[in-house]
Length: 239
Image (cartoon, rainbow, N blue to C red; front, side, top):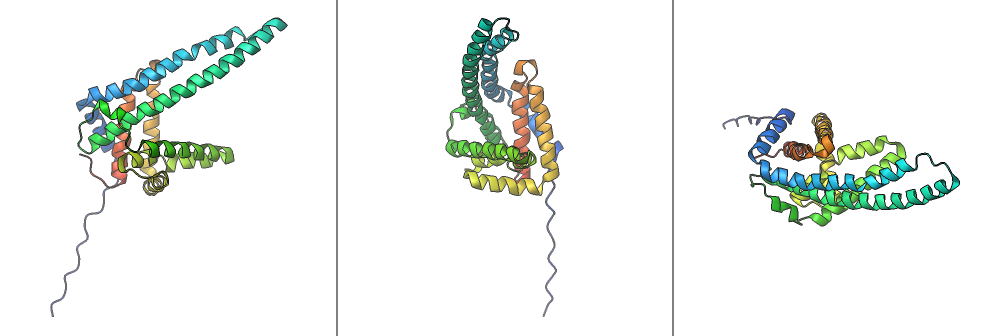
């Protein structure tokens, strides 16, 4: 009776590479600048309009910084109340618009990672949109609750569930499934995930310079970088 040969172990899975993600994001953006810049331009324009729309509130605050008479105090109180309500309503409206516009950049980055040419028209797609909205509301709610409890829980929730939006848009996961999936991959790749947060945060911060104009470049680059890391965390190849 012949002895069975011992099994030969396969190659160990490679660890996520931040440098590979940066290189791929740069090359991909360089090869497909127009659709990504066009998608980011929508977000940038919305943010610029929001800044312009918030100016009246800033002017009212400046004018009422030092009221001299009781009449001026009353007038300023009324003006500040109206301006604050209007400013809050405008800010919420533009935040919602920016939220929906950013989804287009996410979809384009996910498409190109699968070998599908990115197109501006993805901004109009509604696939898994309802689940994405529910996930985002739940995600924000959990973060706020965590900050109320002791700040640190909010940071942990934000960190562990950060890839949930991509599981929703890419795989159509339900909100709870997306949260579990994000927790699973991030908790197994804590080091690279921390670098992901820091790097994408720095890039996003740079985008806020010059009235947000740099968002045209930094937003697509940051999202492409995150998508590549997302694929690596899931053991998927990027085309």
